[in-house]
Length: 306
Image (tube, rainbow, N blue to C red; front, side, top):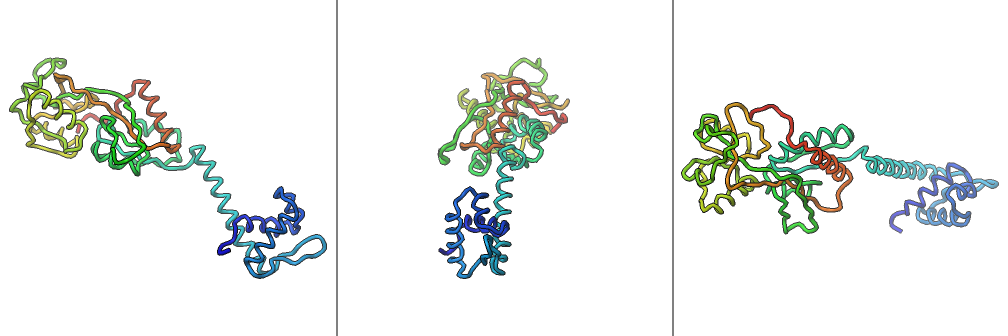
């Protein structure tokens, strides 16, 4: 055999330490002939004697002692692996990679991550934030991907998805915009935006996808004049007067920005997709998040502003 059977090396560690084949057999739960056969196979592989007999016992040769040191390292590595398995099953160690759209990252995940970290402080959590399309593309490496709308990529088999919550998309306005002067609960019709400059998120944004669909269903062709790859940049552009934008109803607004509902209503679902079976940290994180959903804790506490 090119490599020794690791079990032969483990058997040798017991025999060498106990100095007795019979005692080693009792410890291992094997018969004495079975242990002797393993030692014979190991010696044949090595090509030299591992031990000398004396009375009822055995004494390792110099080569046998050297092999004992090597075999002990294998034994230690297996013990470490067993300890790691115990820790992982008890969620004492491990890692969790989340991919998320900016809306999900901002309004759902940060508080959930804080709760999760308190429960499982030894789990390393990483969050990669982009738009929904980027989050979907990371599903082959991420434990969980959080997107707007549970659209499953056809290129990745075995995906599962579920909607966590549904929320409205609202129009984002500077406080001095004419549309902001109407009552807070008075909606803005999409038809009123004909000819109005709109500040957009980049292609692949779930919010943008939903708004573009709503525009086209209303018989309007959206004008793409300003386009930004971050929600904070959209808010700043609206603040500076470049146009109006669209944001989740979960968004907190500073005093110089505001939102109004839209008609027809634009509904956005915040969803999770994943490849089964989930890792144990992934399962535990979903439990934390779904508990928060049931408790009605949606938005992340944060400073008001861009």
